Image (tube, rainbow, N blue to C red; front, side):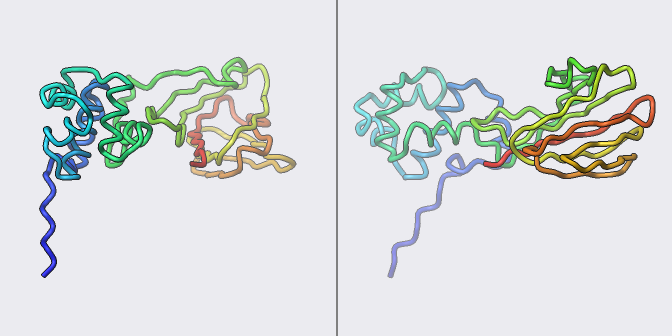
Length: 212
């Protein structure tokens, strides 16, 4: 009969809640936790991995517990022993699967973007800390005192949801009138931007989704 697979340790596959908690730990602790998960998933003891990495089990334990930093040389030896690349390990450190992010209204940052100099106000609604930016959601406010209405071009797809006011929005040669509740989705690579405000003030959510 085939030999039954040995159950994986819970620490090797943390729950979404545990991954969320770990995402806020210092980088040394997150790297150590990722190394431990890989080691346990391969059913290796501290001594097994330490021997394969040419280091002491005590030092490896300190690294796994975030009590010591691993130099690039040491990290490379550990990754080689685990059969993964350093980049793969670090991408797991930044993995956000299962995470929920709440940013209270008072904690949302006002950031500078291309339209800022034209009187547009951008409030960033989510912060992505991974190795690759996946999306950017903004709450944007404009009024008729804005100096001008610039045109934008950028990679990815943009989604706009109108909250307050009324405006004409230009996309290439097309112009759309947006009122509260309207949603507009378009390619960011085509020149676009507000064309005319039909009310004193407008407010809308703009989310840019970047291709992976």
